Image 1: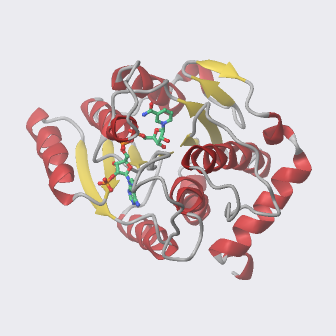
Image 2: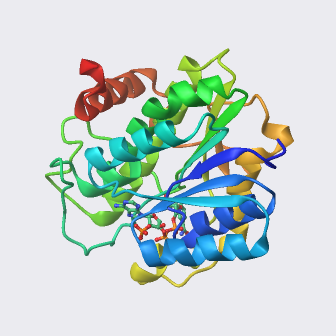
Image 3: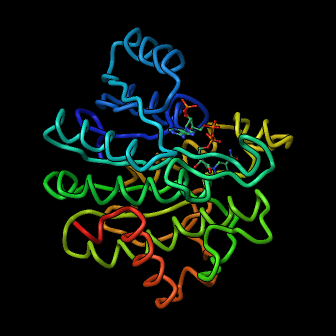
Length: 275
Ligand SMILES: NC(=O)c1ccc[n+]([C@@H]2O[C@H](COP(=O)([O-])OP(=O)(O)OC[C@H]3O[C@@H](n4cnc5c(N)ncnc54)[C@H](OP(=O)(O)O)[C@@H]3O)[C@@H](O)[C@H]2O)c1
């Protein structure tokens, strides 16, 4: 896919690998909808893109730790744009963001599940009409190799909480959603794939987790760009990639009954089942 002139939403593009991806897409001529909460960092990126003189950057501020924030972002994008060619669901928090204690979102959901998974789920569904109208179009879910199965009796991890389990559960949920949504979108011209960009890139999330980075943002960014614009993945959907290579996710991702339960739960928690 030639992204010149295309409209691409990259959530979590004020920092880390999302920022790299947004800048690269803009330099290829795309209209990039950059997103995050930090207005100062967003301005630095928008200024950088403007100076380069290719593409365009439009900033959307939204806090994805509340479902209202995700709705507000989707509504703004739908109101402002007549097409959306690629949606990169990248915003996320790490296993230790805001500390090691269990935290909840504005809606009372376990925080990592809310920010890393539920908001992206809601955004994807709210943006689907525009993505379908812009087909062929793509959704890229930035997940991880860190995957922990969901315990459907305690999805909000009220017992035995650890940040790494919460993070890994949210990342597997993204992959289960990817497979599930791909089935639903068959024949629509909208594809959806998930990936582990790279291991321990040098980003805020990794540094605040006290981990020594072992990959660069460029490595992970190129893997995300591959799914967003690569010709070799055109028409491919419902897949998980480790970097550039197609890979197997945790077995729960291939359990249709588990995916069905997650879908029902997610529709209920986001209020979409009532719509
Ligand atoms: N780093 C790694 O090695 C690695 C490995 C595997 C997967 N990943 C995945 O890659 C993605 C990007 O990670 P990164 O390492 O680039 O992280 P990062 O540098 O910490 O950046 C996270 C981005 O998400 C945004 N964000 C965080 N919380 C938000 C909230 N409540 N509402 C709205 N935006 C929010 C941040 O924007 P503001 O601060 O402006 O809100 C920022 O732009 C994540 O999904 C992560 O799980 C990363």
